[in-house]
Length: 274
Image (cartoon, rainbow, N blue to C red; front, side, top):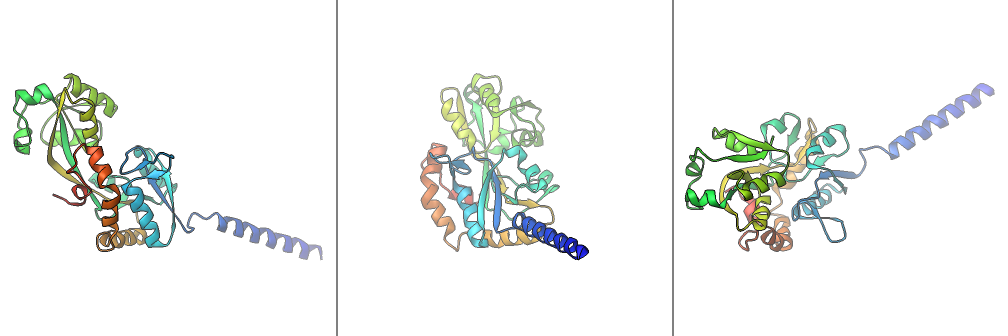
């Protein structure tokens, strides 16, 4: 009888442990989406501190497509891939451009947005060399004396380096912005965030807005998660036909134009490769 009771207690314990771990299993009906909520109107927060933006809406739509609840996990951009690898998040949706280096550690979806790479220039430098949007990209990068600046590992460094330039590397965008604005550097290559920097320094900087490159943005999942990446690719393929992109245009065109300080800049600027 005693042995029977011990066996019964052991079975009940194991059963309760199974139920408990099952209830706390990461593979539940929640899609945990990692993004850095500092980049409104793409990944940001509303006035109440809740996630808001183009890519927040895309994440919510993906959850609806997969019939899953979506949990937005605010993660510093540099920590998104480590969070994915450690299992803290299931997917990255947050203006992450597809690159060879990143493809060594994560699996990317097909592109769903395209970042246009532009440049902010010191105004005196631009005037001295006659730089404007009539100048071709080849002509821009033929000015051998240009002093480029940027954060190590970013496109601000890699793109000028691909043209043979040495680049002054700094620790943050604010430092690069200040250097260009004050004449300590001539040019900073980057994405839409440069428009805000220029707006803060209108008297000392100018924008070169021809697309130096169009960098594809993809959703990233843990290496080998083919089931999720296939579902995500199917979702991306129907974003236009399902009406999702139209809804995003309606909701965010005005905010995008405001962010870029140009009423002609809308979501379509980011939906097309050209």
